[in-house]
Length: 141
Image 1 (cartoon, one colour):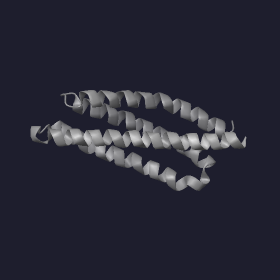
Image 2 (cartoon, rainbow, N blue to C red):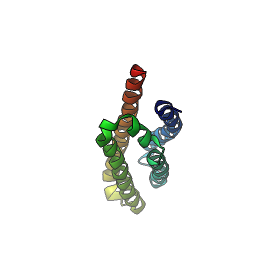
Image 3 (cartoon, one colour):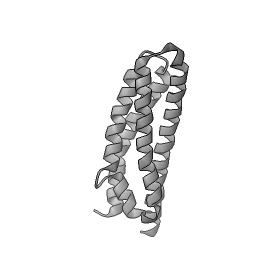
Image 4 (cartoon, rainbow, N blue to C red):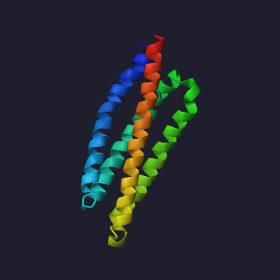
């Protein structure tokens, strides 16, 4: 299998996970002020841990991208670093949600909103990176 075919295959597999994550993010947006917030945040955390790990595995998404975009390794590292920042923020919010201090509810909801925007932005950057690489390789082929 060529590097480009491998990247396309990995990307298709990850798209299923992306759709599940996006659906959960929509639920979080819709139900953020409900009592379900800790459970939804925990579910998102679990999905993201698995998803990010799969992207970073040897022979995974980032390795396939790196093989085709050697000159853009710094961008890849920034995306990997974002995984850690997103999970760290999510862990903090989950703890805050579990404490359910009514006085801090609006702060928590704002943090959740910010996290969801950050996650949207991250996924968009990953998608654009893959499209750039796949498109550039298709033009060369």
